[in-house]
Amino acid sequence: MTAVATTDAPLGAEGRAFGVYIHVPFCVSRCDYCAFATWTDRHHLTDPYVEACVVAAGRQLSSERPATSVFFGGGTPSLLDPSAIEQLLAAVPVVDGAEVTVECNPETVDRVKLAGYRRAGVSRLSFGVQSMVPHVLSSLGRRHDPRSVLRAVEAAADSGFAASFSVDLIIGAAGESGADFGATMEAVLALDPTPSHVSAYSLTVEPGTPLAVATHRHPDPDDQADKYVAADERLSAAGRPWYEISNWAAPGAECRHNQLYWEQGDYIGIGCAAHSHAADPATGWSRRWWNVRTPERYIKTIAEGGSGEAAGEDLDPLTRRHEALELALRTRRGVPVAALPGWGSDEALDGLLDQRDGRLVLTRRGRLLANEVAFRLA
Picture (cartoon, rainbow, N blue to C red):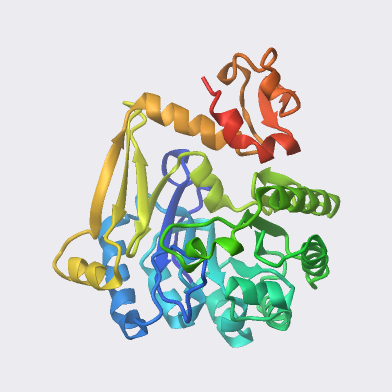
């Protein structure tokens, strides 16, 4: 059974994209760098949690505004059985051709599970690979090995996802040499089939994580910059140019759900700790809100007739405009020339921007210094 398509409009109601994010907060183990709302000891809550998410979706979503994209994030969404994914998607009205992504850890999937996801309505997979070098995976606290990735990709291809899966990488783990990162890039591009989309994120140190207190394992920014350049060169040469600072894709394989975030689109977050955003085009204001953090509280709140919301904030038009420019600057679309009035005379911006069709786009060096450029946005 597939998710029910409610309209053929490619952009949903009123010609506007609309996304649904479903948070799955369960993991087998927690990586040392992870600060997400995930738990390793609450798998007994899986069924009531899925049921709560289904109820919440029924309350908050409408066939009058079907989703153009659905994203299952975590945590480890691929711990869910296909029946749970099917149950959740049945509660989400979607347009024909909606992008439906499930994040997967390579060691948690096989042909049977992925075929079940496909039948449920999933159209895209995102594999948390992080590295293809065993000692680097160990340094990150990952449970899989490179052979797991090969098996997962083979299973994806056999299940109908050959042209629609992504690989996530992490740049700058302790003990990762330049040669190690180069080996990871070559191994990823040698996968059969080759992923149409690759994300590569610099390792960040989040407060409260084991990595935060292990200062000897903190990443070196210069090392990360060198590896970023290597990734950009190799992926561009392989026909997967950048379209956002940390994302590269073959033409047409960009993640539509993430693009919705970068374009300040509307989305509803289902599940604990999930975020939502809704804009009012008439006034220019928007509202952002987020749900209670733990699965227990979320289940309880939904059972009591609530929405799961914990708190929120209103964004005035000026704040929204500045956020829109910061987000657009990170993408290949760039920002209007007027957004950086001093760019032609500001020596600090030399070599960081290219002008194309009245817009300013970050160069490769500019992407490494994006925060500095964003500081100068008008």
